[in-house]
Amino acid sequence: MRILLISDHADPLAEIGSKEAGGQNIYVFYLAKFLCKLGISVDVYTRWDRKNKKEVVKFNSHLRVIRVKAGPKKYIPRDNFLTVTEEFARNILKKIKKENINYDIIHTNYWFSGIIGLKISKIIKKPLIHVYHSIGKVRFDSLKNYKSQEANNEFFKIRTDCEKEIAQKADRIIATSPVERDIIKNTFGIDEKKIEIITIGVYPKIFHPIKTERARKLIKRENDQKIILYVGRIEWRKGIGTLLYAFREVVKKYPDAKLYIIGGGKSKTSKKLEELEYRRLGEISRELAIEDKVIFWGPKKQDELYKYYSAADVCVVPSYYEPFGIVPLESMICGTPVVASRTGGLKYTVKDGLTGYHFKTRNYADLTGKIITVFGKGKDSYAGNCLKRICDDFIWEEIADQYRDFFNQVIK
Ligand code: UDP
Image 1 (cartoon, rainbow, N blue to C red):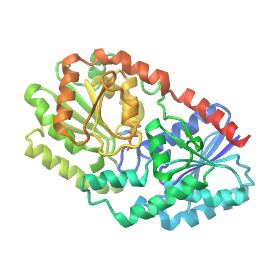
Image 2 (image 1 turned 90 degrees about the vertical axis):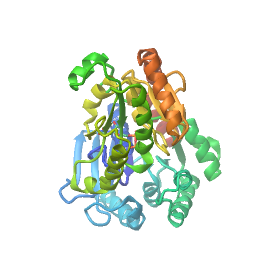
Image 3 (image 1 turned 135 degrees about the vertical axis):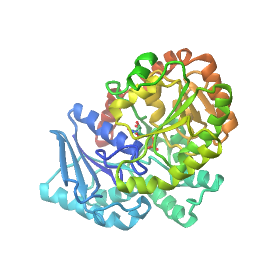
C-alpha cells in the first residue's frame, strides 16, 4: 500500500515547539513512521518553506518527505496558504507523473491540504481521507468569545465554506476523538457513518516515566519544591496568561513552587513571531511579582521531554481552544497528572478526577483550585490512572494498526 500524505504547513522534520510547528508535525511524523513499520509506504508532501531545505528527504526505505514549491521558498503566514493551493496541487501532480507513482490513498491534514487533495483526487481518482486538526468555526467562536483580534470574520467564512466542501467531497473523515466527531457532524451536517474515530498516540520509547527524584537530578532541580510544567507553543490561544494568574495564587500557599515553561522557536523567524507574546507574558509576570519563579526554558527535543514531565508535580494545559492536544498524553504516560481547560479534545483525553482535572476555560481561580488539589493529594495518587489511560488507548503502534485496517476497508 502506498499513501500520498499532504501536510501543507506542518513539515514532520521541522523545529518543534515554535509558533508554527507543533502537534500536527508530530502527528504526521509518528503516523508515517508507524505505518512504515507495517510495510506501508508513505510520501509526505509539505510546502517548501526554506531555500536551504532539501527537496526530498528519504527517511527510510518506506518514508519520504517531499518539499513542494508553492509560493516563495520562505516563511509565509499560514493564513495566506489559500493563494498557493493551485501551485501546490500542480507540483504534486508533476512529481507523481515524473516518477510514475501509483498511490492507493490520499490522506490530507488541515484544510489547505484538504483543498489540494480534492484537486489531486479528481485527477488520479483515488479515495481521499481527511483529518481537520482544527476547525475554523470552533476556533473562530472561541477567539470571538475571548475577544481576540485574530477573530477575522471574513477569513473564517471562507475557511468554513472550504471545510464544508471537504466534509462533503472527501471519501472519509477521521476524527481524533468522539468530541471532534460530534463537532464535525454538527458543523458540516454530514452522515456520522462517514466519520471514523482514530485517536492520536504517543511513543513509549520516547515518553516513559522515571522516578521524580531521579528526573529532578537529571534536570538539576531540588526535590522539595513543587513544579508546575507547561509544554507547547508560545501563543496567545494556548492560555499561558491564565496560567500565570493562577500561579500567582498558588505561590501564596506554596511559596517555593516554580513554573517551568517549555516551548518556543530557535530560528530568527520563530523568535520574531513569538516576540509579542513573550513580551506580554514577561510583563504579566513582573506585574504579578512572580518573575523569579517563572522560568522560560525554551524549546526541548522530544527525546528529552520525559525528564521534565517526570520531574513535574503537575502539567497544565490552559488552552482557550484545543482540537486534540498531544501534550496531555505525553505527561500522562510519564505518570504526571494533567490539569486542562474543559475544551475540545482535552475533555476526552484527560479523565476528570482520575488522571487530573478539567477547569473552566480561562478561569484562573478554578485552575488555581485544581492545581492545589493535585499538590495536596500528590502526583502518585494519579500516576496509575494516567499510565492506564494511555496504555489502554493511545499507543502509536496500536493506532497504526487501526489506520491500516481502516485504509484497507476504504480501498476495498
Ligand atoms: N513540543 C516539543 N518541544 C517543545 C515544545 C513542544 O517537542 O519545546 C511538542 C510536544 O512534545 C507535543 C507538540 O509539540 O508533541 C505539541 O502538540 P500539541 O498537540 O499539544 O499542541 P499543538 O502544537 O498542536 O497546539
